[in-house]
Image 1 (cartoon, rainbow over the protein chains, first blue to last red):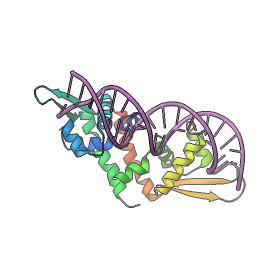
Image 2 (tube, rainbow over the protein chains, first blue to last red):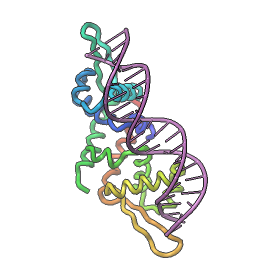
Image 3 (cartoon, chains in turn orange, yellow, green, purple):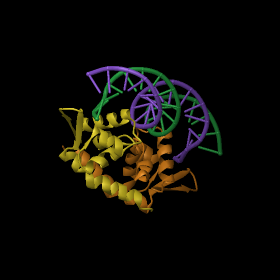
Image 4 (cartoon, rainbow over the protein chains, first blue to last red):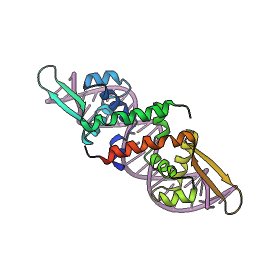
Length: 93
Length: 93
DNA sequence: CTGTATCCTGAACGATACTG
DNA sequence: CAGTATCGTTCAGGATACAG
């Protein structure tokens, strides 16, 4: 379970995952969807998620340069779990 | 969902909740169960959880002084959610 | 026993500038 | 376009001392 804490640590990490749960995205698309994140933070979170095996990174050849991010199968399995977490938060206690 | 992030923010928060999912605990019992946490961190996390409506605090009269912590109904509902998170982490994918 | 006060470290964040 | 470099800020956390 320490694993989970390491994989999802960071204030913005789950929001990046949420964006990718809706489908693969390029760097620019993620940036537009999450304007609150600086380039630095977005890059750091993506690298962390790749390292954790949650996200897969694919450089695309051609011009303009493009990098595509998508969830791995492991990352996809995070969907219902995070949904449950958010539902809990939306619920008045 | 920002609510969830605020309520559970902090590296140790979910571990404190996990301990309380097994039943109410006094401060000393929590401290023994989570020896990695300094008094300061344990107090801070408990105060944060009380503030978030996840945990209930009850001072008990008599000697020695004692304070009892237990999950609120809202906190109890966190059980299966966190379990799912930990299961995800335990699963190599 | 159940905390609070103080001081310090390190991680995450934020803003701006710059490169392949 | 997709980042890295740099610098400053903020905040969770660790250690120790002390108080109600």
